[in-house]
Length: 203
Figure 1: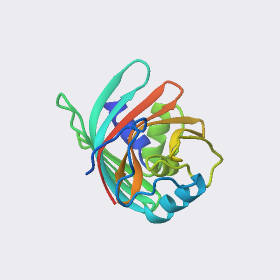
Figure 2: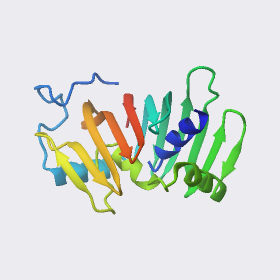
Figure 3: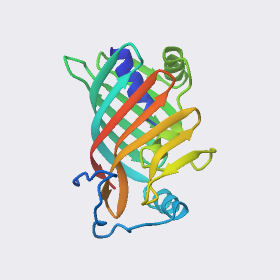
Figure 4: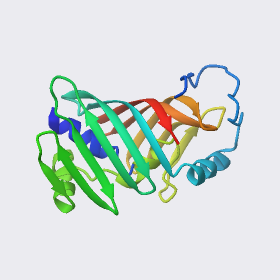
């Protein structure tokens, strides 16, 4: 189970408000536009949200085993720092992506860097996770450098995105800093499913 937890955390690299449901009929909170076109919303998020911090819960399953854990994610441009803490004595893991270099440190003290970290990730997952794209997906936008198939709700927010062989379902949003940001989303690739519930955003 530790392997699933660490892989789930790695797969989320690049990559407080109340949480109204996307299906609820509510007025837009102060500072959040009632409706923008998809192109306008994309441009605004990509331009304005280059640094963020989020905390939440991640559930990971490979079709046979599952794990649930707490996640702290800090993004600064293309660099990311994540911390994972799991239940039942799981020691956790620290993951960093800085200047394109991936580093993984497990709760047991094992330290993998660069090619070794990437090779281990690919060997265990069976595919190369789209690290760069995930920082966009968690914001509710597609990677602007890769072709995508988006589905939108009435407020021009993603309800589903297909990109790079992944399917991302967006179930709930909340208003943060003049933006609609995801509250609940599920990422699927073959048998791998990652369900992320975000408790708080900081922009």
